[in-house]
Length: 247
Image (cartoon, rainbow, N blue to C red; front, side, top):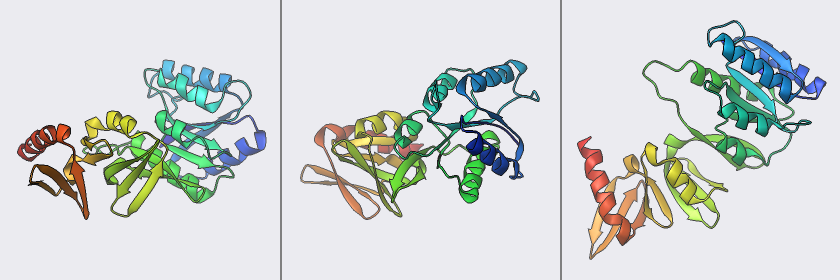
């Protein structure tokens, strides 16, 4: 079960969040802090006590806009800890989802927090804090849709298409536009099997159904999409596919 620290400098919002958290059967304890300094002090004490101590903290629910250090500042500081707790951002503002992604936040909740949405965040935290022995943690990326922030599993993405400073993520269920350059996603997802095949496309190696050579031109089929492979990437792609098949 989870040990939670909620941080918000507005007392009514903090009390409401704590009430909802304590109502969730997956939460062992939920305590509050009214500013970033207090939160960092308590997290530091918990880490000194060890991961199995009574004060250990599994996840921090962080407001973003606070006096002094912001929630983003706190998350950056926590990233430097040896065993940092997981982070869920709670905010009234929609415009920080990309920063949340960069800081590897588990989720991003908008105020006023709905019980059902909070329960989904707690489920995600539980999956990460207590993963199945043979399972792997699924990385997610935040996308905006009609004013709602959703987190799409990276494993669901078949390929990515560059659109200026944005990237369009293509899944089996549709596509999502995010304000992240293709080059950033290429670097971040290389270890997850994504390869650059063209200046405009990044493809999940395991989602390639067919490689075709026709008159010197190379293309790949990913589901129903046929994508061009640039000459400079064609040889590397063939080698990677051969290694993938042998593996």
